[in-house]
Image (cartoon, rainbow, N blue to C red; front, side, top):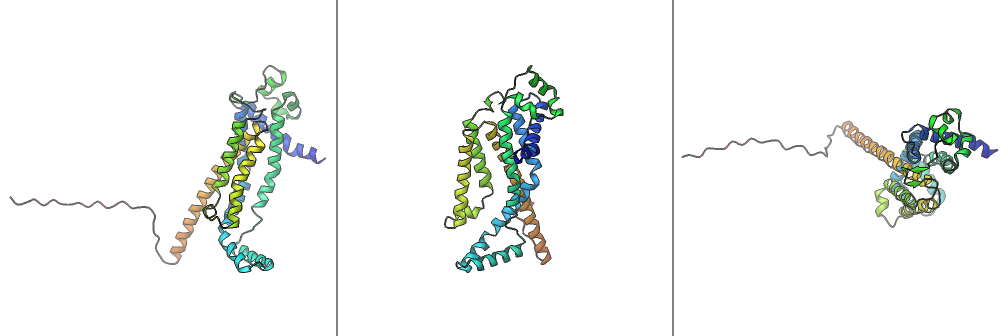
Length: 282
């Protein structure tokens, strides 16, 4: 019952979306269709990803205060929790707000694994779950009637239905870059902080786990992983750049309210000084 519901709500719509992209793009390259499809999925999930990243950055900015609270509490868990709740209330931070978007994306991630496993199979099995508009696309019709062979490859080089060690390694590398990008600089250098040690451990564990999982799976899955990591890196860059600009604007407003002046970090061009040459006496 639950499996059928999961298929109807997530699996079938995603398979149809993928084959719709595959059926309309020039060249009908299945690997390219996966990349475009992944970008579209990430754009749809942009609000969730943005909210999750903002929440993570807020929690990371409080790590110094949290460490001080743990020292003050001196092992008293009840006192520590009370002080933490007071800190979250003061800073208007919900410690669980970063988890909810991730939990909502988890079923979609599972669905994507099933989608690519189904999509790299026999076209006759896939057509059973294709919607009418997708099935009636000229290229999809050619696949169904056998006039065109289904080529599940990326630019004719990598078979998406078979494991690819190259894509598995690239998936791990892009995963590492994505995680490293949002790691606070303090945690990169502070080796005595348990939180920093845990973060450093996860920074290497997740990418290694990604390679391990992708090593034996159809290449379509690590390709999806690579694509989603690259889009996520770009999204993180946009969000982090926006946060820096917002903080700079807030600093300017604070200084103006206090009646002070702001110091610009930009170097102003030196004024040109005209010098008159004195003519020597003959």
